Length: 120
Length: 107
Image (cartoon, rainbow over all chains, first blue to last red; front, side, top):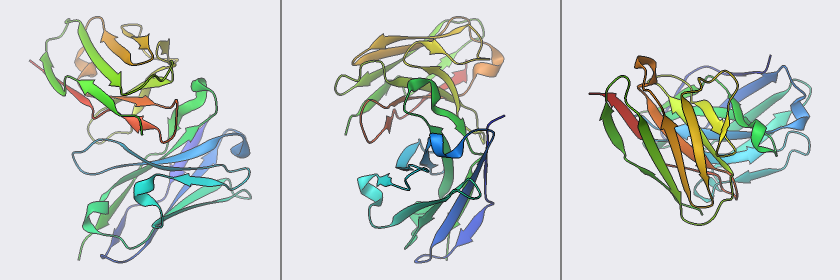
């Protein structure tokens, strides 16, 4: 069965960086894009960007350009998202979500979420 | 970016009620729309994809309709486990954008 397992909660100071992982299993890793979405406390869902695990190509929401880097390791079927220069407004739950080209597989599976807390 | 506007933002309803949530797109998105349910502290769960296709395992009381700029999610008879926040998501063009959410509360 398809599973996306994310790394554990993090507490960071303002200005620091955080790297969250998302390990995929149960399907062909390189056949589906991976998206990252975040949700601040009590707020809605916000799309951050996408990585193509096959080519390693990425596309980021304009808001996160220059501060987010998404990478992948095909040997372990894992994607990573690093956010730099953290500020308090980055406190949120970060999710990875599978996204195929066709609607049937777009955001059909999600990771369990990783809480990132930014506090001095 | 395409803006997705959900209405209402919140609503109170009783068990057994018929509930309708609307999502409007700022431009046509064909049928590239999905609906998600999220309960507090839980991961969003996809209910509907391609505007009207029911996700496997989701009860048939949930249904979706619409195309281009106007979409609806209908719960035909609200059950206790349906009290949650619902989001629409368009993926016709990048970036994908979510509606702001509709919180369905117990009356």
